[in-house]
Each structure stands twice: as structure tokens, then as C-alpha cells.
Image (cartoon, rainbow over all chains, first blue to last red; front, top):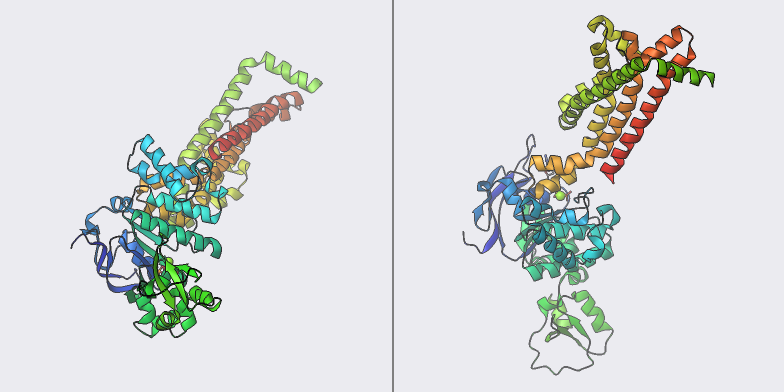
Length: 319
Length: 210
Ligand SMILES: Nc1ncnc2c1ncn2[C@@H]1O[C@H](COP(=O)(O)OP(=O)(O)OP(=O)(O)O)[C@@H](O)[C@H]1O
Ligand SMILES: [Mg+2]
């Protein structure tokens, strides 16, 4: 077991007491360090159960879980959980504590000094976009749903865990704020290089956030692959129908320009006036740009605003 | 006006007797509340956490609530005789429904998601109890204690019926002698005590919940 994998599941299964069939069937998974992995599936398919076996909120009926190469059954559950960030939907915040007290929870349990905790709170609130001066002393009920979830995120990050488990953290948040939070979590994940295991039942969210996506159905992993691969080569009919991969227009919403662009830009003569877009932009938006411009290509730029490729109707067709 | 001056005069003349009655009343109420807390809060917490026990305990308590205070005091007599101790026991029983029921509801009311997220962050059982459950349950528990305190102070008046002493003695004697001044000597301090405890516990509640 090299240190290359942050989380390894070996033959993990879970059958609850008095249940007729397993909630999670024998599963093997390896999650690389620094990867953002989303778990996608319908309600009741075992996403939460799978997630909770990682931090021993549930004990597996069979199999082993390794965290950074360490067998979790050899670590005490409380010690293990203090090393793993955990965020759940909605009300996970402690209503009787202020934002700063909420964020300080794990550092306090770990016995950090006052000064260090204080600095950490400011740092984290800044990171999640809540100016400390304004938000430290507030109670959760004085925050919007989106702000509460930011606090939840800051709290989970407090002791700087290398692994984060997130169970539908944006499930109860309106579409606009959800999209903003998705961008933020992507930014934070890239910035801090965390390994994230993120449960959702929103396909768009799973494909947008995941470096890789685990698709589950009835307790079994159907496919574990990159979004592009899942869209291009769905492993079975279930995945196919889930991602509507027959529907080109649907599919275009999930494929990013950066994944399919023509990177050979030196041989092309590119016009100053041609439309531009980002690597992260979906092909659907690129198509709209193409239709509304006289040019037959869209220039694609990276985060540093450097030209990295072009997309024409040919690239879109092949997606 | 005559009634009041009569009452004041009585207190002045029988200062020792009045003070003793007041002390007994306070002692009776205070001890009843103290024992009530010590018994009912743990029972309430146990009921909230254990479904099997909760049906039995809550059923018993709810049926207790239906019995009037005086009846409980009178029922105590043939079992335990008369005097301070039987009165105390009766008052402890009286104090338990509001404390127990509110404790039960308060702990039941702590959302399972909150506990789960505390567990998920690596808190152990003790930490979850003292840092999460207890503070979240506190406001509702305290309001139960406030109700119990007022109930105990007013019901302690009835302790005089079974020879438990306290301010109720003046009321019984006053009624017997048709001496309304004497009646006031018992009734007014009891009312004042009840109001004071209401205010005091209200304050504690506010401080604890802020
Ligand atoms: N504590 C439990 N005891 C018994 N059965 C459980 C328990 N938790 C989950 N299950 C069962 O296991 C199955 C998977 O549940 P799980 O919570 O993992 O689903 P999920 O994919 O997270 O669903 P959702 O999207 O609704 O959260 C369900 O059939 C559920 O009823
Ligand atoms: Mg779930």
C-alpha cells in the first residue's frame, strides 16, 4: 500500500442489522491523493453508507478501509474522525455556538493554544469568503443557508485534514448559490490540494466537481471514471440512461472545453476578434458562442489567461 | 387596611413563630426542588435515550400529573405518616412531572443531524453530552424547573395539612378561626415567594440562553 492513495476500500460491504440485502455490496475503490471524487446515485443507493464507512460512523460488515495507507480499524474512531473533515447537509452546525466557536471545535478538542486557534479562525473565514470581523460572533441562525454551509466547510477544514468527506453539502441550497459554492469548493480544493469524497444526487454537480465520478446504483458501483470517460463510454445501460449520453445536447452541458479542445494553436492563424472562453466552460456555452459569431472557432484560455487551444464544431461533434 | 395591620401586628408579636414557618417553608420547597432535580433530570435523560424505558417512565409521570397536589399529600399520610418527611416526599413527587417531561422533550429535541456531525468531527460521548446536548437542552429544561419551583412553593402550603409545617399553618389556622389577618400572614409571603422564584428562574433561564 503506497502513500499514493488517500483512500482505499478493499472488499468493503455493509449489511445493516435485520436488513434483507446489503446496502453496499462488496466494493473496491482507490482514491488518489488530491483528487476530487464525487459519488453520484439515486436516493437510497448507498452513497451515505459508503461514505460513513470511511470515518467509521458505520463499521463495514466485511472488508477494509485504508486512509493514507493506514488500516482505519487500527485507529480509534474519535482520533480518526479528528483527522478527516466531515460536512453534511443543512443543520450540521451547532446552533448554540457562534461561528468562531463552531469553527474552533476540532482544534479545541485537539488542545491547540488560544492564539493558534484564533489565527486559524480568521484564516479559514477569509478562505470561505466570510470576513471574520463581521461573521465571527454571529450565531448560525443569523446566517443564510449558503453562509451556514461556508461555516460548515471552514469548520471541517479547521484542523487541516488531508481528506474531506462531504455528504450532499449543497443539497438544500438554491441553484444560484449552489453554483457559487461549487466554484468556491473547486477553488479551495485546488488551492489546498485536499482529497475530497463528495456525495451528491445532482448529475451536473457530480460531473462539474469531480476529477472522477463514482456512479452507484442499488449498493453497487456502476462506474468509476473521469466525467469525460463516463460520458463517452458509459459502462452499462444504467449509466447511459443516467447521463443521457444519447442526447448530444445534454452531454455538451457536462463536457468542458479544456477536455476536447484542439491544443495545436501554433499552426492556426487566430484572429484578435474571435470569441474567447475558459477551459472550464461547457461545450453547450461554446456552441452558443460559435453560433453567435462570424468565426468558426472559439479561443480557449486557461486560468492565467494564456491561450491554450481552440474549439470548432468538429471538437464538439466528437465530444 | 385593618386586615393588613392585623397581619403585621401578628408577625411582630410572633416573630419567632413566623420565622420558623418561613424557614420550614423554604427548606421544604428547596429540598423538594433539589431532590426533584437530582431524580428527575437523570430519569428524563435516560427516558430520552432509551425507547424501552421511556414509555414506562413517561406514562407513570403523566398519570402523576393528573392527581391534584392535595390528594398526593393526603395519600402520603397512611403510607408515611405525618410530619416534615412525608410532606417532603409528596413535594418531590409533585415536582417531578414538569422537570422530567421537559428534560425528556429537551433531549429528544436535539436534532440527530447535529449529534451526527459532532460524532463525525471526532467528539466522544462525554464531549457530545456536555458541549452539545446539554447546552441545547438547557432552555427547555430550565423552563421545566421554573414551573416545578413555583408549583412546589405553592403546594408546600398544603404540607401543613399533614403536619409538615410551613406558612400553610397560618392559613389553616386562619381559616379555622375565621381570622383573615392570620390567613394573610400565610398567603402573602407564599405568593411573594412564588413570584420571586418565577423571576429568579426566569433570569437564570435568560442568562443561560442568551
Ligand atoms: N442506520 C441504518 N439502519 C438500517 N438501514 C439503513 C441505515 N442507514 C441506511 N440504511 C439503508 O441503506 C440503504 C442505503 O442508504 P444510504 O443512506 O446510504 O442511501 P443514500 O444513497 O445516501 O441516499 P440519499 O441520497 O437519500 O441520502 C437504504 O436502503 C437505507 O434504508
Ligand atoms: Mg445520503
